[in-house]
Amino acid sequence: MLSIRNLSKTYENGIRALTDVSLDIPRGMFGLLGPNGAGKSTLMRTLATLQAADTGTVRLGDLDVLKEKDKVRKILGYLPQDFGVYPKFSAEAMLSHFAVLKGITDGRERKRTVEHILDITNLTAVRKQKLGTFSGGMRQRFGIAQALLGSPDLIIVDEPTAGLDPQERRRFLNLLSEIGENVVVILSTHIVEDVRELCSHMAVIDRGRVLMSGDPRVFASELDGKIWQKSIDKDELHSYETSMTVISKRLLAGRPSIHVYSEVPPGDAFEPVVPDLEDVYLSALGGL
Image: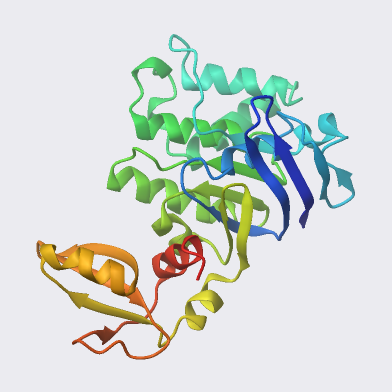
């Protein structure tokens, strides 16, 4: 269990990135949803021991994450939103180097470890290829490969599927799902589908504050009978936005379709819909 209590962070320019953040994150896949600028990356960097918090505590079992940084780094796997590679090195050589940094100094053990990581991330066929020639999806798989070195107990991935094509995204999500069975994996993203497909626990964060935390299925059930849908003409949108609580706008067959929040039937040809995680997320951001 990763236990975060009352974590706050304000940067020197006065921007308050985190305000009194408290979360309990169990083993398995945990989704952290929030728009860009919500404070997700600040929280991830703090958990990854890359920056200090102003106040608060973080514990991973018996470890004090904010004070015992060297011990945490030995059991941490981290894939940041943006990461660089040495373009002239091969994936195999770079992973071998990272393995040494992780304390795997025995040559035979390191070779076995690197071969295993290349295999589970589907990089064996390109292990001799220079990293500078990798596609976006291959780079992300290499990123998670280096994060898996040393059998970490805590894995943090920050916006891992942004920019991936559908096939690479699916492959990456399947890999994360397999990894997340026995360790704490935090998936920080603004992509609702990633959390819906992978995570049994989640939190929504915005403007540095936790808006909700728990089981996404429970949150969706709490919206039963409160989400309504209707297809409209484009010139009707403003009228509905001023008279109802419109939480989302979508295109269906080229025509706008709106979801509104209402605890009673809104009439006007609206139909009830089964709430999904996007409805939960957007309702939370709207303060509902």
